[in-house]
Image (cartoon, rainbow, N blue to C red):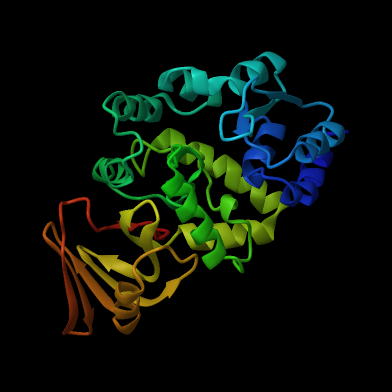
Length: 302
């Protein structure tokens, strides 16, 4: 079976599994060395093994998430074996195994050493602060796999998020072009990886690529891991002018969400988030700190 045939088959079979389509395509095409996944049941693992004999699927010796094992998929058997046990390695080694950019691995390792690796507002804010521009190819805000930790609360929020967006046109896991947290949203290495993945999707799953690119290339008002809002709009300096909110929908409080739906402009500074309808102020939110509400402008630049 040629690589092209494998890629076409992957597009048909991946929706039946827990795999992120573009990550799997990238491994097949040699654009990503390995991926790690927890399959919801053994039949998914066997489906991949039987249909892609040229790939190596290795699983951790012990369960890592409840009763689930971490499985690693790669063309390199040794790498697959090492990556299957990656959670027992330190953060830098995990990043090296998964092929992430060194600059991004270093920043994430620094956060982890201080016990801040799962502090979503801080981590996202620092990447934002390091950026001159936000490239949509590095928008990882809707990729939760590596940012949940093991807290039951986060998994409960994830399930609520899934239910709320159960009619979204593509798998919610697919809303990413990179699977790591970038050191900045204009990180050159991360953008390069994102472009490679986008090209694969455009060629082999163009309908999926259109939805992902549209969703990720929009301004985001960010508060926390499951609290953010995506807009159809434009950002000028510290003001967001918007037409509407677009899905997926997060777990932002319904009262706050309803006020935003009535507005068309949001002004953000270090102390507040103000929602307006033209020049009429509808609501003023006092921020707890600088990370508590900020705008990331992922709009495609012409």
